[in-house]
Image (tube, rainbow, N blue to C red; front, side, top):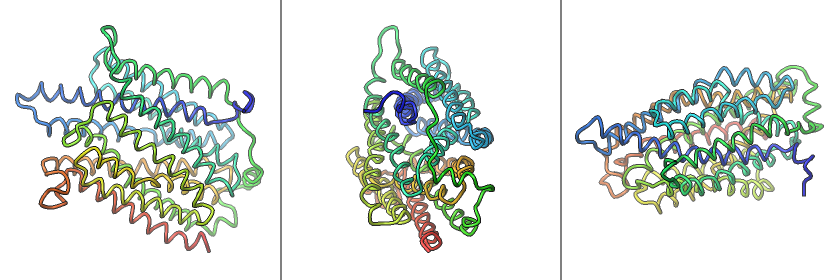
Length: 434
């Protein structure tokens, strides 16, 4: 068993605690948005329809997601620069402050009956602190510095596993916790209060107790080389560009599809309750476990590039099947097909970290995260507007034409993007393996 001194050098407790808190927040926000949008459309229209509620929800999430992705761009770059100067805790601590403030805003929305638009202010504060892209890039840069090139993919997948298990536990509990309320506390108060408390614990632990672990020998050697690329790696710029392209295309597929799922779950034919939302989110986090096991087993016989392609094909199959979901059991079957969908991103990050110096890990990984954010500024409104335009189409494969699914265009676009990303990685493998 690890002593407290060794535990203080592990980032896993922060990832675990923060992700449980995030799962609580996601379920709470989803249910509060559903309730407030329904109330708003009912008040504005004498004959409200499910379509009007769906459009209100999707419009809210479109603005919310675009703010979450646009605002962090400059702060994240600055935090990455600070991290690469040797202050590795800063890109993790500052975003945790933003997380804490944005969760407090949701708590105030519930307790004080503030308009749901107040969450836009919360997400702006979250973005100004660097957001998820700074937090996660900071964590991954830390993992890169404390691992060798040979086992870096496994170490990054281990962090993803902790992230996934925490999300699984948090999601399973969140639906039940949301429904707990009394005369003195409104529905969702307990759930969001726990999220705020867990983020506060993360902030205290990271600021006052977490100790920077020692840097691995290989990372230290790379740190001592000046410049963004070494002489050897300057010949692999094509690989880096292809890895970026693959990661961006895959993020367009995954990010766009998952954003639409949040709204799709709230309408017929699914129309989930808070408990079902928690279970659905938990099903997504099971993928972290299956992806980790897949890396452990398959990495013995196949290369990193092959692992990436396997993961992309897995997601493409699952998201294509998701286009025809008309019942809850079909949703879980579609999720089951994506069992390796989380393999590509940590593997791409690991391959990227092998191309650059240790002193550039932070800026390289944050550049990848920011490229996802910039791409999302285009795909978020596109996915949202296509979804809204097809709300009246009959869902599922029982329609006269498979294209007549409310989620068909976004999901098929996601499937196509994942497939195209797979082709990009295949081209990149020529330079990597050769």
